[in-house]
Image 1 (tube, helix red, strand yellow):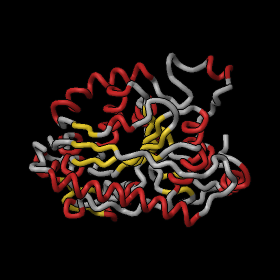
Image 2: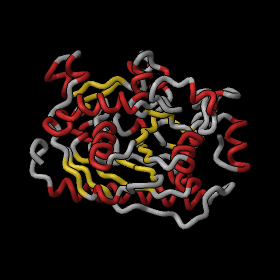
Image 3: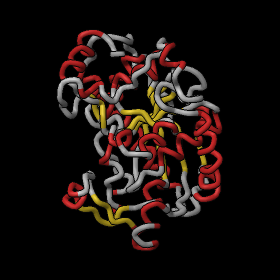
Image 4: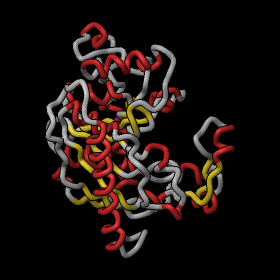
Length: 313
């Protein structure tokens, strides 16, 4: 269930988590055993447990039946509200594992469902999205999140999906810093953590596929935010969005503005290192992570320079 050798043993002993949607490996030390409590109980060869799963729910909690319902409900939003246009979709592998990396934005991020929906409908491949374990812990929402393909962002989970099950995995290395950006800070990428996503890709022997997204920043832009008020509610911050000002506190929390989405897939990046090594060069990991961040940042600048209108593209 671990990702290989001494480094994996160290992770299991210290309980360090790969959280904040792939922002970094080893961010928050936890009590002994805590790192594994959010991992799936079943394994690919656990046939007895497989027999007790509900319907088509897989070991991660994902249900293709639920995903199909969600796709039908979300498709009008995707095609008519956001009017999503893709470039370079053919660069996403049609088979084998790959780690999809994108910029992240909007108070309630709109990019993850857009990316997952587009790939699943156009390429007919499931996409698993890594996110903070707090989503899993929320009543009802946590279950729905899992049914839609949400997975706790732990390195063991990412490794198994990529290396053992050859899946597409989506993560946002900016973590919570991405959606926390105000409108004045839009499209200015935050640091990609400590490069945890690069190490996972190296260990799993899969490419990283950078994705640049334009439109999410304007779908629910933050006008102001309060960290203290957010902490009082158990949140990283409490945002005040343009949606709240235009639509009111309730509708403004769930309704997006009709920003035009443009998504550009960049060339996959393959790391010339053998998989399943005990350790990888930390300086190489940080350098590669910054390189991915810069590629997405440069592409965003080009896309914004070509954009004529926030609403019409």
